[in-house]
Length: 188
Figure (cartoon, rainbow, N blue to C red):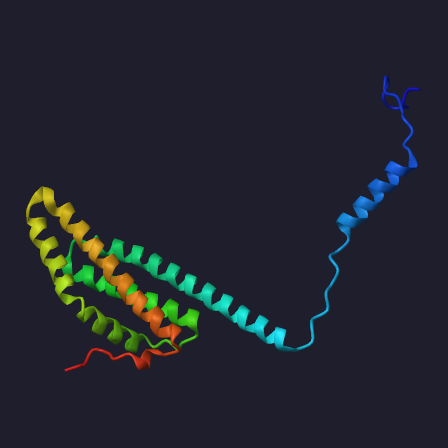
């Protein structure tokens, strides 16, 4: 028997069992998942809450590490700048921005001037390395072919400095401290 609109096609009867199965499968796929009522507060609830807090702390710490690594890459770009003073100022600005983002992640109030003072104080601990990079990049830039080496040294130093300062702030904020708990560089 040919179908009305398509010559050469034969219509086949559909048995009731396969049609019922397809309808129930469609209903199961469209039905929402059953709602589970929340459990009453108990000792298991407290352990679940502490486990959730541990997961949140782990996620926050991994986000903080990602923030530090991203800003270390930004500092590498700042370290490529061939002018030594602009180079250090660019890296310092990147680190202060990193502290701002970390402060937001940990819910610590951010004060730009205080953060800049702390960052400069922490960079003071890396001054011998920083001066070595600046001196190397300046001296090597006098030799025409070697200035790429000076820029690479400066960039690697900027990465190392940013990572170490970022890790200090992550550990500091993980302990629940604020920017005011870190000593800043003394103004004279």
